[in-house]
Image (tube, rainbow, N blue to C red):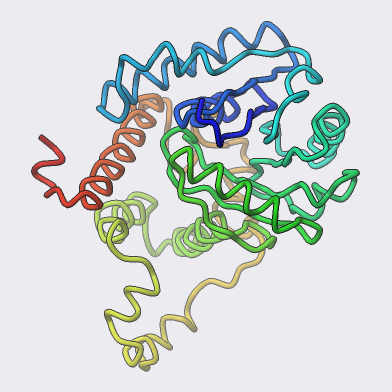
Length: 326
């Protein structure tokens, strides 16, 4: 373990908790992985091993490091033992404010008084999560996106009582374990989910008006818009296109025509939900997942993330795309 990395505790042994534990261990941290049910810890460690093997198989980590990396993850069924010597504690359980507050409060009682506490929530307010803590200044959100061991970006979200120390310590830990932290405001959806919802709202509105199909929208995103995203963000594109163009009559017509619906229930999202069509988990949503292979879809997603990581690393090191793919 790197001498400047704190011991970490991940609270929650589900998919997200295991992926975060693996990410921290890959970065050199010693990690206690806590699960409420002892019998869930074995499968969680198996998923960590599978995640490591996937990375090694794609050349993003060295297979010879498998044993030392996985040995940095210690399963724990006792919460107090998990956090007793931790410098960083991150909760990764269900998106339920009351449950998260209770678990963070219980962990705070057993953790060192200087430990930074965090949550990987994608939607709940940092200020609300820290409101019942004895030391709210030690808390800030670290929102890992799934799959957490692959996606490099992590949103760091301070609440109204978060200290600069907590934000700095969280940002430093993420950076040292290979992530790209971005500080975001404590607003609904932070930044990542906001842009996801903005895109989905617009496309769902168009689908609901029978102007376009879900397949056409997804093709536009994947084959078109997303193909430029590794190299260019929204504001960079605005500067490239020219702010005179973004202020043109044509652009104003687009902005004026964008969806302003405030409730997903008013779009096909709500109609499908009302019919019990929840997506992959129920077998049908916008697509029929009894026909499409959900597991194969997720594998292709992960492989696409891997390709982007390799491209970015090659660019940073001055290698050409051809050299990076060889």
